[in-house]
Length: 205
Image 1 (cartoon, rainbow, N blue to C red):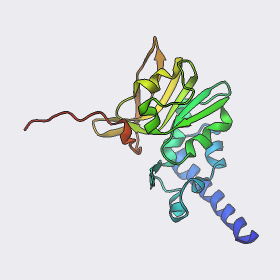
Image 2: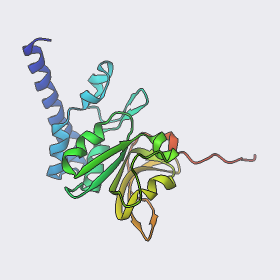
Image 3: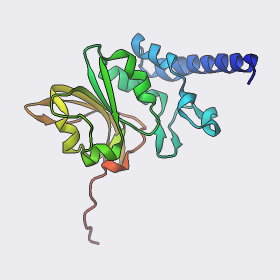
């Protein structure tokens, strides 16, 4: 790749990110400057295979091997709801791309990531109760596993997608007296992390 080609691609990416902010985020209520700055700073195409990079700035999720890159609006809303702070210790359950971690990492004190399977199995390296003040889940879940709730400190926050009656919603919550519950914030298209699906019971016709 020549220097001119690289410069042209960088300019195209910057234009695409500016259009994403103006046409997808600001028009949908994402106006906090810290969130917009992070969304502008991180090229979404870097988290997609080259064959899918042209889809980086569409207004919906992009499937990749092992997961999905959710829509720009989902990530903007997660940042707005979570308000990551310099004092936060953060755990991210990955959706398969690493994009959310790249957005959040410069904003917080420390950041660890685990896969959905690790979160379900309880294989959260170094995760003991009181370790994390903020848990972010890069996708929608049907249920929150005990192992993941246990690694959130008392008073800590969690922001995730949530599947309720087959509709995905942005949700948030806090750990209060040892209990964590997620409350819906708004309906939003979010890739589903099927590792968190509830066991299917018998049905009778």
